[in-house]
Each structure stands twice: as C-alpha cells, then as structure tokens.
Image (cartoon, rainbow, N blue to C red; front, side, top):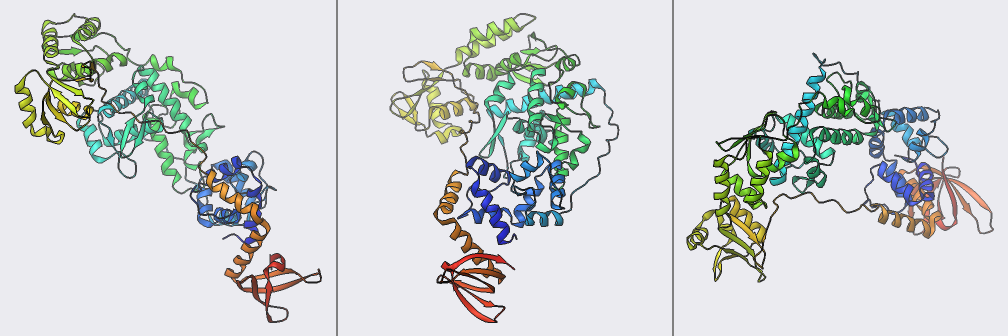
Length: 568
C-alpha cells in the first residue's frame, strides 16, 4: 500500500486538475463512477492500491510499459510517453514514478512470449484468400438476416449460446461453432449487432450493411475491425503493427497473448491477414493506415448477377452471387434453399403470403419477378401468386380505439376455428360483436396468427391496411454524459471545505492504523513550534496519543495545534 506521503502527493495533483483531466484519469484506470471515495485522499489511496496498480500495468501497451519500467528504475520517460503515464496517475508531474508504482513494477515480471511460428501450410493463394473474404461476408449476412426476425440469444458472459450455435449449424449457415462465434464477434465489434438484454440484435448500421454489395460489405467491416483494434496493436494510431509482435503488445498482462490470438483470428476470418500473419494484398493499405485495394479484391471474386432463372417448379436459380439488394427482396417471397455461389430459391404459398404480410402485393411481386427473370414469369408461379393474394386478408387484425385488438373475418367458420385453436390460447380470444377480441397488442396478435399460418392482414381503426415489420433493431444508446461527474463533485466539495485539515487528519489516521513512527510539529501557546517523535497509538476527541521515543513518555497532543506530520 502507498504511504500517506505518496497518497498526498498524488491527491494534491488530482485536486489541481480540471474535470476533463480527472475523468480521463479515472477512465484510463478503470475506476468505478460509483466509488465511495469521500475526498481526493481516498481517490489517491485507491489508485495506488496494489490490485488497482496491477490492472493499470496490465493495460499498458508495450511502449508505455517500457517507458514506465525505465522510470521505475530511476530513468526518465520521453514525451509523449511521460504525459500518457501522468494521465494514468502512474508518474508524478516531475517525471518520477510514485513509489507504490515503482514497487508494483518491480514485483510484476513482464510477459514476453515467443513470436508465434507460422502455421503449417500457411502459404495461401490470393484466390483462396479472396474466397475466404467472400464466404465470411456472405455468412455474416446470413447470420444478420436470421437475427432480424429471430434475435440470437446470448449467455451471461455475452457469448453466443450453445443452442444458437446449433441453430446456425442446422440451418446450414455455418459449418462449425467457431465460425459462428467469430462472425458474431465480428458483428459486435464492428457495430452491426449489439447486445440488448439477453439477445444480440441487428443495429441500424447492420440493416444498412445488408443492402450493400459483397465488396462494399467486406470493406466496411474491414475498416471497422481495423479501427477497433486495441491501442497496443495500432501503428501510430493508424494501421497495425506486425502480427508477429501482437502477443508481446501488453507486457504486464498475462492474459493478453490469448486475446491477441483472438484478434488475429478475427482478422484472418475476415481475410485481412493470412495464416502466416502477413496482410493479404488488398488489405495492405489498411495495415498501413490507408484504404483497401478494393479493385484487387473485386478482380478475384465472382461477379454479382442481377438476373435469375424462374422455373415451372416454383424455383429460382441465380447463375452467380445475386446482388445483395435483389437477394434481400427475393428472400421476402421465396425460401433460399442453397447457399452456394449459384443460389436456388423456392416459392411456397407460405413464403408468398409472408411477402404480402410485409407489404408486397400481387402486382408488385409480378413486376419485380418479371424484371428479375431471364425466362419470364412462369404460369404456375403467376397462378400461385394470384391464389395466395386472393386468400390473403381472410383474417383481419384491427387496432380498435376501445383498447382491444379485434380479429375479423367474412367467413364465420374461420372465426370458429380461431376461437378453439390451442396454439392461440395465450391471446385470450373472446367473442365480440365484430368477430373476436383480444387484450394483447395488435402486433402480437398479428404475428401469432401469421406464425400459425393464417392468411392475416393488419388494419388501422379506419380499416386501412398497413404493413408490419417484424424485425426489431437494437436501439442506439443515449449520448454519453460524464459518468464521473457526481463523484468529482463530491471530491471537490470535500477538498474545498478544509483541505489542509482533511490531509492532516488522514495522515494521522494512517499513522495510527500502522502504529507508525512519525515526527509531529506542534504549535505551542507562545507561537513557537516544537517537533516530537512519536509512535502513534490513538486518535480521538481531537487529540493524538503516542509514546515519545526521546523522553520515553506517553504524550497527548491536540490535533488543532499540529502543523505537520512526517514519517520517520
């Protein structure tokens, strides 16, 4: 633990800083905004506590760790390392390390793992790396598409749940759990998905990303991944340092090598680096802090197509990767059956009905598919669209001003079926003059009926049909205010009340707890001062008690008369 003098030196510096600097210090050191500190002395003691220093040292990237080690050994730190260490409350303004910090550095052996050996068979052709880039972007798009209508569950640690990994495997979206974990991590790191409660939800950025082409998708994620790299991996805050140096980027953090490997694996998954750790050709610009060479990547990828073959068996075949914006719309009305570069889709009454539920009409689907098709609109598909559209809306959900949700139908037999359908019990459907009624909200009623395969449409109170979007996006967070503002206000109030008396009281308390030998300077009634060397033993009632080592007697001194305290 830091001595009282050390804590006072740091506390004095803290008290002279403005709120912006103090907030930066506390954020760098990972201090809790809810800390119960009463004054700056408390703050200084907490920042110089051994566990807090262990965490602070573990967060230092290699250049700062080496600079601090030099300072702790009696040397000096050059700028900008000195300023960075000062704002972490590890180095005093004069450039010296606080004694508690120097002691912590002396007891922590820097982690120095050997550079990783390149993986066997690490040589990879540019074409193979480009294939990895295409596959990663396409698979992430599949994951986000699924999460739009069925959010992915997350466990307490924030990771993807085992059941969700299994769901992605069974859907044929991924080939192994590691791929699922890494691509969800990519989505979270780059802001395409965000945690909301116990779920991963797609963000507005993620929804927009799904509309982009394959190369643009890869580029957006690659840039965001590069910008999200920890500071210790960045080269002058721009690109990234050699991947072989990543395991040594945080010398005082024993857990870092494992985390470094996780970061390397994400960039390899996204085809930014090869298995040998070197940047792939089109990502070399990103590694240097610039832009990727997208034309080099595009030249290695199969070209996107904007047409499909519509067939009489109600299927569609894309002769290559279908342009994402077309794929997204086609998949609202057809089920995607294969995920190869030449994808296939199948139309069913349910998939066509789902498209109508989302706002499509028979006319809009015919126009879209005719424009998309290389073979015209087959008669069986045109018939199925008309038949499904004619049936759609047989059941109407109405948001009634009375507060109830009404379920109407021109076919009394359908209402009778709904009333006894056990799958709809949770809606609590009741007989009503206009059909059936439920106390559940209209969207919940609508989607439960849609999931039960009823031809349902949504209407407002005036009877006008409206579309219902099922996907739920992650909501953006509120603009962040300074979380440390209340804590800083409390610390400043304590400092401004009587800072000198507060420092003295804390030093005396510290000495009594440690039964320390201290020199106390006391102001006598005649205005002169006298120094006593005491072994502090008690403090109370405004008096300090201790044994005078020189006279070998017990003395009691009024705290109000004590001018200063110094350790012996």
